[in-house]
Length: 512
Image 1 (cartoon, one colour):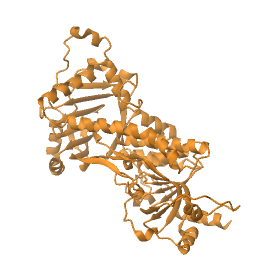
Image 2 (tube, one colour):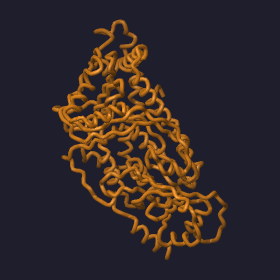
Image 3 (tube, rainbow, N blue to C red):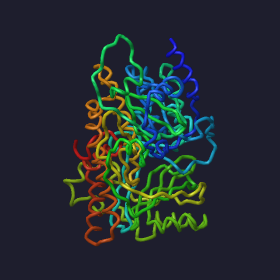
Image 4 (cartoon, rainbow, N blue to C red):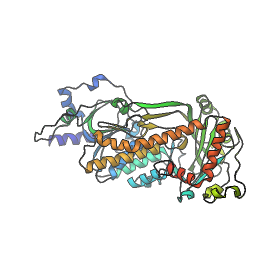
């Protein structure tokens, strides 16, 4: 009885109502202290009564991917009764900021795939996205500065209505929070703090005593992980999920190594306005990196422009009019000519074996993107890198999203990979509960790794290959790139497989 009362008091103290404001992904920032892992009987007793609580799952990082996992768990019959802690230090946690539909769009957006949209619908979050600004698109055009080729994609090529949807990150996050508020059975506790240390004991045999063992006892037996927070609080969990970004503190404390490198590029992002509404996604490869123009609705578009670090500083600091001119030049006539609209002649007589199965977009002419007329947001710049964790899972610890992998943003796949991780992990946890498994056992968590790691490595390798292939101005390579554009434009099976893979509806890139 006393334990139940203490648990209720501690939960009341730690739990805040969910605000409709995005959290940061810096939940895992902090300094590891050797003192924090020392424990004695007095400290353990104190944690049990005033500073400690016990959870099934502790999600470190309350950003989009971490909240997506929480929503997935709250929506599944076998996991909706789990007791979940979410650790994130963003001070906005205690506020309830409202997103107004007539606000100027934020420069931080995500291009979500049809697979991600289906996931959001399944957990009940998409209905909240639809209450705010979002922009579906059914066409995409990709080309490079040489003018030797281009590819146009259309959702009709695969019998779909859309290729994707561009949504502000704050809208995605707010929608997940709103969804989570509706889970009446789901026990969630927010800790507005940082993770300082994480300790695990090796597993030892349990002794039957006839009493329910305390969290400290379970920790000593290796059945729980202990998390010490920067505000002095401690908690225990069967499973710790690192959803705390590329500089993951969970990954560091778990001793999981990574492989990766930095690109000689920064990404400049911002929002621009047009005189007409943009309904297509555009991407042009330039010598220093790709520039993307993504529709946001209401005559707004998002710019994601990869370039050398020195150039990014110059573009970030130049006056607004000059920057808008630079954007329009980069999307049209700068660096090289516009591509021709067809390389196969009027009727493609010489290619009848190929044109018999042409997709509808194969007959679409090259188009010039709508011109930007105004910059309507701040310009932000950040360095680009590739990182992949050597392991996604260890005993009582698992990584999802950017904590497990970061990729080049040229195809907008990063957050979609994270959402797929969240969905996969929630299924593995549910399957484990169904057969009575310990959800923190590494043998169970490795099933999640076996499903997601090969798929993430494949996408990472493809995006890295694109980055390298399109960042070199070399005659023979330019011809090969042009051939790739033409192949994707005119060979129907290739185009359909590219669309299916990029949209998340096909696990492997070609003919799977």
